[in-house]
Amino acid sequence: MSQVPALPPPRPGDVAPTLSEMIPFGSRKISIWRSTALMPLVLVAVTSVVLFNLPRKTAADFTLYMNVVAASTLLFTFLLLYIYGGERKNPLWYAIPAVVTVLQLDLVLGPYIWFFRKVLPGDLDGNTFVTSFVGMFFGAGLMEEIMKGVPLLIGLAVALWLRRTGSPGGVLSRGIAVQGPMDGLLMGAAAGAGFIMIETMTMYVPRTVKAFKDPEMGLLVGMSLMIPRVIKGVIGHMAYAGIFGYFIGLAATHSRHAVRLVLIGLLLSATLHAFWNSASDLHPTYGPYLSAALITFVFFGCLLKARQLEASRLGGYIDGRSILALSPQYRAEAAMPGIVPPPAGGLVGVFTGVTTLIEKSVGTEAKTTVPAAGPAAVPESGLAIGIGERRYALAPGQPVDFSALFGAEGVPAGCSGLIGAAPDGAFHIRNVGTATWAVFGPDGAAETVAPGRDAAVGAGTRIVLGDASVAVDGY
Image 1 (cartoon, rainbow, N blue to C red):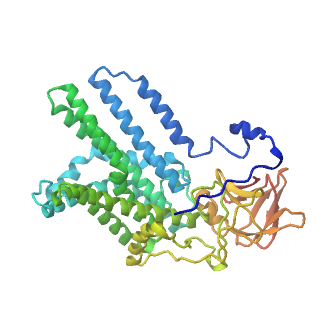
Image 2: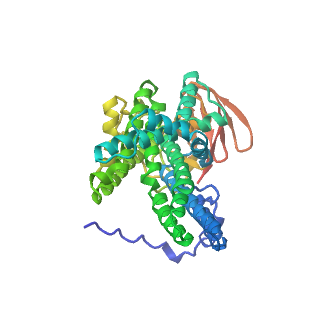
Image 3: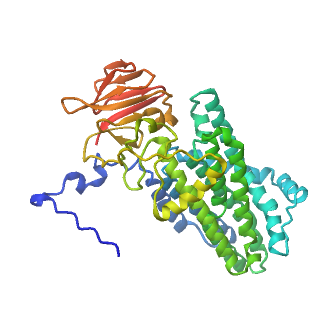
């Protein structure tokens, strides 16, 4: 039985609450507008008001009502994945894979159906589990996962082109490009959400409503179908495409194995998709439970592994609780992109082990090192560097790879530093990379810091590296 943690000690001397404690939204140590948690809260608030005010008198009114419920539920589910994954790309970019998937369903669904269900053995009317699985693999799994994967494969091509040419790219190319496994997983989940919305609200629900002579009963049964299809999205179309996206993200960071990784991701996602569709033929009661558990297991493994790799790619330490993280103290030979923290133990380790085994099978397992010293506690106050809402506390002796932390924001390769303590208690950063920095003090005074030189930093300092401006501020 786990022990209950002790209550925190009271503040000494019956100290009165500070003004920021009494008026929390006015505190300078938090930022409501920059928090990703604001998005789902606003979505819930707006959706609830809209639903209360929508008329519910005609069939068209109820159809609109169902569309709002479905769209908001899918968007809310995606935002939870986005926040949990810790992805730093603007969430609006994920509308692109969703829109591309919707356009394919609207414009080229016919050719897809002809090829996968007529040319290939994609007959969906199997009588046994084996025949049903084979038909669903080609006619549903393979067809639909390729359709959802098209925008991700475009993003992979852009990412590989940027890496091959060494170009930092523009805002558009960096937004479209697949940045890594987490970005690929989220792009896939977004594509899956778009697929669910169109398939459910323009195909399955209308077909169900029309099957009843009584319009009211048809709408009731249609809504009862819409709800589980949308809720299942996180272990359905969003999960299948997210798994495929995870491997496409791996392909972006392991370009020599790109073809193999893409094929593994496609076959795995299509197989899971087909298994769900045919599981009731395996056993009418327990088959769907078995397939749902398997899909959840694999998808959650990909999600956890992607978070681990994301911490490595951006140089941060993700514990799911702190908005201010101190990077782990890796040995010198490990302070570079692609080095990942040791996998977690317990149940989390079991899930991450699923994808680690797959990586081992294709020879692309990321190198794991043990930190020379574990992640240090974030000091109560001090200085931090960051771009936007991402901030990393500074500590003497800490190496900082700006290229790994902020490469997506435009920091070029060769930008790294070493934190040192100045005699007056301030910090300086030694340029230990190969690129020259432009440093602007709080008063606007500028200096050039060549490799091997030190730059004094304090609250209000800006370090300009390529197209990015890294801010130093207090907390």
